[in-house]
Length: 148
Image (cartoon, one colour):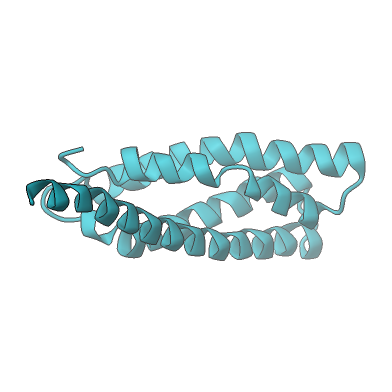
């Protein structure tokens, strides 16, 4: 009888992980819209060069996503002595920014300059590169449970 209950625990954890992963992806998709809108505004409307415009758009999307993850995706991990807000924001910004810098900006630059792909399409391909790495970083480092 006891083994039946212990076998159920991983399923509960898996369902929570899937639910959290779904929330993570919803926030990520909203962040893609924020990033693309900012990139269009900066480059397409204001004429800011591609790479600086991309870096600014990424930073705005990172801050947008952090707030949603902190207060929705991982809201259960923001009390009881978890990491202070500014430490969490800085950690999130540095880790997510590093992934975005490598994946997003590199793919954006390569597709646009080397292959002539429209910059907003290149940007979407760049944003697709990092979600799995970023989910793991959020789950295990940025919003880590104290007992993990």
